[in-house]
Length: 100
Image (cartoon, rainbow, N blue to C red; front, side, top):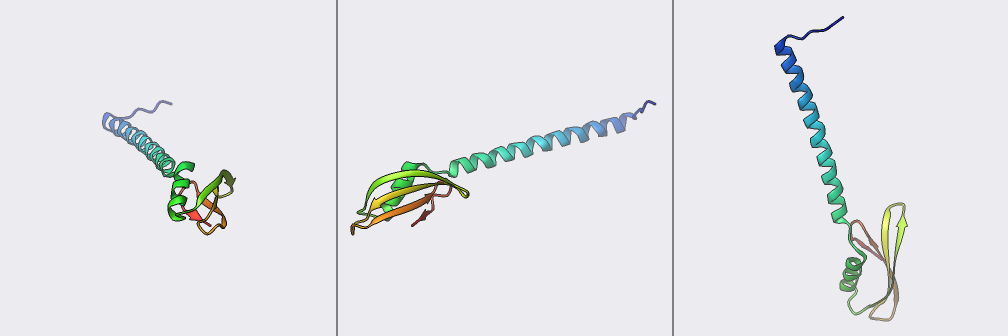
């Protein structure tokens, strides 16, 4: 059994397929853009150290390390504060938020 479309129905079918393919391409592009935004929002260890130094002025950084947790990567910055206390400061590598 062979199905034949009339010319107007054939044109509509082609347009529907083109619209579907175009929609899929746009969605894939938007997903790629979301990944780029996520990558751009990540901060480096150097940036994390600079943020901590600004927040804890007068302190001295003595050690840094990177830890992977269930919530994501964090930077642990060990420093001696201006009043000679040892601090372990955690910085979220994704958002840059500082936790003490």
